[in-house]
Image 1 (tube, rainbow, N blue to C red):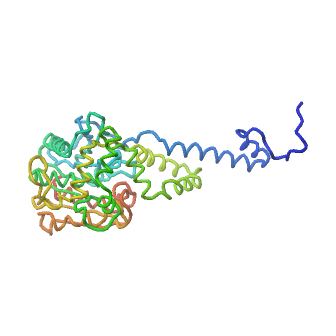
Image 2 (image 1 turned 90 degrees about the vertical axis):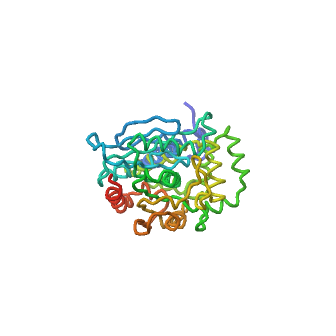
Length: 376
C-alpha cells in the first residue's frame, strides 16, 4: 500500500480533477453540500450559455409558410371567421418571435386572447439563410400584405419594437387595410431623444456595418448582434446574471424562468444584409420614414396617411427605444389626436412585451381597446 509523504501537507491533492470531491470529504457533510451546489451551478451555467432553441408557450398552428415568415395562428377553434384579426408583428431584429408568447402566465398572446381578442396571429420571422441575403424591407412589407389579404383584407396590427416601424410603414402604404395600430417600444422618429442606439447609429460609420455584413456572407449574423447587445450592459451579462444564478441555484422556479429566457436570448436570428443595411442607413441614420421620404413598395410613405386609432406604449427606462422615439408618432400620424392613446409604463424594453407586471396591468386594457376600436 502506498504511503503519503509525511513532508506533504495533509490537504494537498495531486490529481486536480478530484480536488473538489477530496475537499468535500475533508469538510464533511457541509463540504458535500457545497460540492453538489457547485456542480449544479456549473451545469446550469452551461445550460443558459448554450441553451436549446426557444419554444412557443401557447398551442398554435402554422397557417402560412412564406419566404420571410411562418404565420402562426393562436385563435380558438370556435373563433368567428368575420372577426378582424389581431396580427402581432414581432420584432425582426435578431431574436425569435417567441417574445410574443414567452411562457405560460407571461405571454402577450395569452393576454390578448384572455382579454377578448378572438383571432390572434404572430409573424414568426425566419432566420436569414444565404439565399435570403438580398431580401429588403419591401420583401417583408409585401409578405405582410399577403398575410393581411389572406386573413380577410383588414387587420389590427400590434407592432413590437422593430415590428412597430414595419407595421407603421404598412399602415402608411395600405391605410384602408388597418383597423387599429399598436406601437409598443417602436422607434418611429429615430432622431428623437438621446438614447444609446441613436448615438451609435449616428457615430458609427456605415462602413462598419457593411463590414459585418460582408463577414457574414451577405447577412448580419445574430451572434454579432448578440455580442453588441451584451456589451451595452457587460456587467449584467457577463457577471451579475451568473452571480444571481449561483445565489438561486436551488430555486427551481428561478431556474425554470432563467432557462426559458436564456433560450430566447442566447439563440439569435441572422438578418438579410440588405434589409439590415437599409434599416441602419435609411431609418436610423437618415430617419427617412419620419421625414416622409422613405419609399415602400413603390410609393413615398407618409405617416399622415395613417388615420386609424393608434395606441403608443413606451417604457420609462427603455434604453433601446426611448419614449421620445415612440411618442413622437403622435405628432406625425394623420390619426385625430382624440383617437390616439399613449402610456408610459415602468421598466425597460423587453419588459414591454414579456414583463409579467406589464402583461398583467397594462396589456389587458390595450387588448380591450383593440377589440373596441378594431372589431377584433
